[in-house]
Length: 394
View 1 (cartoon, rainbow, N blue to C red):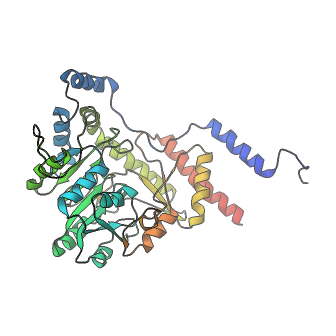
View 2: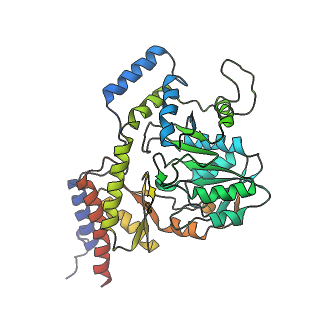
């Protein structure tokens, strides 16, 4: 039996109606919800800031710098207005304009853009199977023009910093790390912030500590701290209008600093919850044709994001639609590798694995405000997609 011409109920429209009906009955699960502090406590901070009349670079900013140190290798910390601007500052402090900077081919576009903004040439080197900068690829990309290596702590997992440090030291290069995802990450040997010449972190709106915007630098050489503060004040010292060097306005607001401080006490519990969510996914998806981002033995991921790499690129779009039909928000995750960005400028040394990961990746929710029912629903929805696909295949 077939539908009559013009009949409103075809098989496709029935399926769409069923999906719509299901979605209306399910509470949406957002990709990210920040774990914000008690509003009354924060309002007290706001009152103190407003009454003081000092809205930037005051006592809350200095306190945030102190309280971030234990999380970041106990290095000197300089607060900045954003991770992206901090990367520009970091590169400018450790390398000369016109030099080459080695960057991973699989990362957020801000990593590549910071190199260009700093007046340097990005050189793409490939990544390993987890999307982390591959030391062998870095070694192959070094030329006499290379001035720095820009690693990325992807999804909250540290880049292979000991190996990269050895390469850098052997060739007289600086290492900057983009740690936007990595507040709270560590391995058995090191913590985020401890091995790069400068590492840059974020307290942006979608991060583990979510203050809207803002970030910080961790600095290996104490003698560079004053240069970093000078750079963040547009090249002049407080109270003087004489520019002693180049810089930008990277001042962090007191309101932002206070909001970040209020979240630091809850960071250990939040990281633990994110790890539980990851482990639940790993168990649920163990037999599926996909791979998850996540830590190995001896690593503690900050689990900023949970990536899925499907085995077959053709599964990515329908799986994301299947999750959307269940009112579960997902995000594209570097689905264009750095060398394939429309505006890319630079040199590509190697990028085969970066491009392969970009074809197969997207991200599902992993924030600490997911309850057990949310996590179970996400897991069952992903498993349901592959079970349905298997039945259709038969």
